[in-house]
Length: 121
Length: 357
Image 1 (cartoon, each protein chain N blue to C red):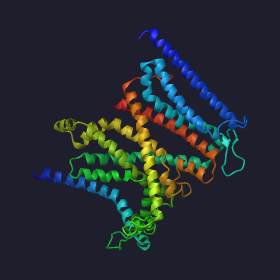
Image 2 (image 1 turned 90 degrees about the vertical axis):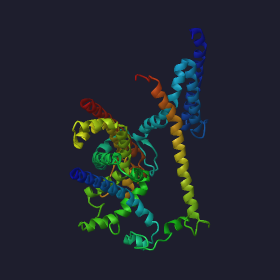
Image 3 (image 1 turned 180 degrees about the horizontal axis):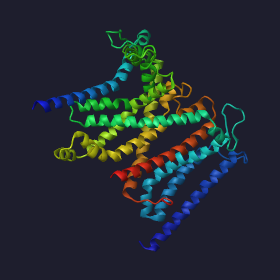
Image 4 (image 1 turned 60 degrees about the vertical axis):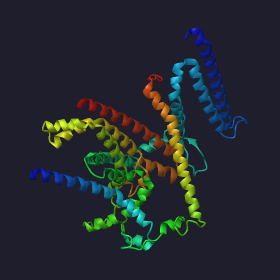
């Protein structure tokens, strides 16, 4: 009873260890980006990692975009510019996705349902 | 349907198609003459011709129904896709050949000049282009490493674990980020020589001088690692879908027959996963051949062209030197290389699967 138990436990440890390692690899750059948006230039160039412990977080990045709590209701040209580009992204995404769907869906149906002969093929 | 019933409609359909094609061709002819400066009358730009193409496509679809009846109706399903591909992919590629065989630099005053095979001979003797081509071999080879890691992660996610949803979302996140943002986050910030946490970790592990983008092979590997970070989730999710489609009874039966987990994987899981593995790898290789965004935003092809890809080479040719003619020739030649390479790859993959199964 004891031997398979140890084997089971060690395999569990390896599996969860690998899962957590890869989750860290995936999430750390995103964490780093998010915390960098809250840093002063000094904190960025010193590579501080943990908010409140290593550095004092502020709404630096969001304020320069006009999206921080103290600027969000004010007038902000950067925010207008940002929103304009964001709208462009949405229009491009929705346009491409709907075009692909409108043209691609009938073609996929037709190709899977019927036989077509095109030129010599 | 009798022939008497089909004939009048079919012949009127043919007549309609002929009229529409004639009008469309006439329009192209008139506009081309106008564009070449041979006649004084025509449209200011080619937009009316593009609209005429759309109208002609509609008439073509309608005439197919009239001429061929039910077969024409079936053709309507794929006709939009065929005409879209023809007008948006095939036509520009063929038209690009005109540009490819011409000396056309946007910053020179002369404009476009036909120069025969000059671009092609220049291309064959351009060391930077062939250097980029050699780098592509390295980048494509890294797909194997990415595939191995992705397969491992898919197996982990397919195992009996707690918190599978969390891990799946966490593993997929890198794929959802924009490549340019990834380049900045990892390439310029995390790997920064002075303050980047990865550099700090490397110093801590005993590498005194963690400069990631200075020596050729380290720079190449750093780009490949970044690319892997972003694209492994794509392969992983495909392989995971494949793993979940394999019935559990097979590996359980093998277990009962006394197969070790190692045998179980190589004898049961891996062969069953072969078709989806090949699909994932081929798709990934096609994407990899277009790799450009990370290289452009992190190294710009440097140091000394060590991380350069063909796509980033073409990008620099267009952007920094405005050399449209030569850049288009590089792109057209690369397209032919890709088509040949993918065809050979698919053929080899097909033979290989037939051999194993």
